[in-house]
Length: 457
Ligand code: LLP
Image 1 (cartoon, rainbow, N blue to C red):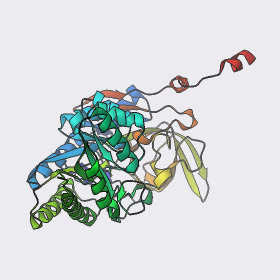
Image 2: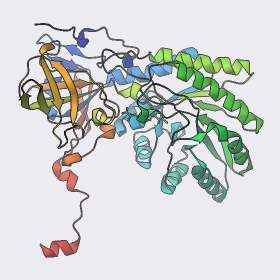
Image 3: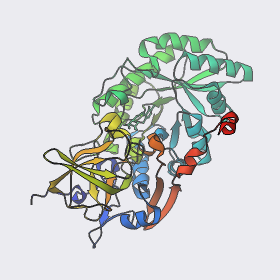
Image 4: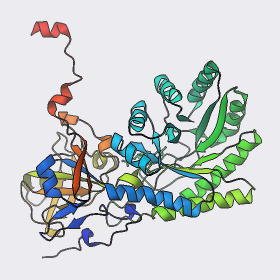
């Protein structure tokens, strides 16, 4: 029997969790079974059922600390890493990142509210979005949260609000720097053809028009070029372009104090992925900003970045239970699990790849056992793995999928009226619930049958 080397035997990078496939506390116990955060995965499912999202606290904290540490090490000016909460938004995540001194980026009233409830100080929150509602803008202004102006529609409304309040409002602007990077086209945002931000060619007109407002104070600039990026050059180039934009803004009398380079650092989902470390990423950006500032005799702005995936993805795993097998001789064997595209829409949306293992036999991958792992939804495309090798397995066994902390829970749905899984935090052998499992009846909460229909029946 040919067996490949288990990715679970690879050395773990404690400092930069995005370089590992598995959470930093992952181990295979003496009984040969998988544990994370000191908790047996089998025990977790016994207690909390499946499918189950699990987050490892140490991996999360190490990721946050890596950003703080690298910024301190490489950047002489002030700095703030801001967690992009779209990756995984919850009261718990807001609380954790804020306890590590990070700020938070939100894109809706829901994410803003979650951040505030989780204890993130309002001065460390930034509010993004290409189509903010009036209500969302008012909520942000009322809570003294800095708004990142994405377009003229934002600008006009903020000007009107600041005039009606008769006091100054600090704003940042987002622009598209025209940088291409190699990532899926849906998650590429920095090229000229993007729905986000002002075109770079429009900035001089914008700087002039902000000067004409009575109460808007431009304090920062923002750009984000995409997500799951493995190259360092795009961020090096971006930082240089952003310093040039600060110099342009100066000509119009704006004193830009904050430079926010967005997020985008990739993580290792599979063995062929090799992302840079958090340290290397921060070093590249810092050096580029430092060099451009020195060349132009500019004071160092506050350097901000907005990591999402590289904070939370590797900390997360999803556990599924195997149900039906269907062998199509000469073609493939389908193995169906109790979740799928509703808890992880990434494979069907972006053809994303993950790594997985059998919980009861994590090190073994039998090349004779090639499975297609299908979800339980009524959709042929609901496939989590097209072809994966697993140890011998049977109905009732558990499968662990790694790297699911980001853009799984936050992009989950109730397709087919499937309730969302519970989410558990693990640390030092203790497990705590951070999001309760939905039940089918929870899903009826917002259904309304108009009275006349009730009468009819
Ligand atoms: N800042 C801004 C303005 C963003 O739009 C994003 C991600 C981030 C920060 C965080 O980027 P990260 O560090 O996570 O790469 N749903 C897709 C990813 C969409 C990313 C959207 N914006 C996925 O599942 O791959």
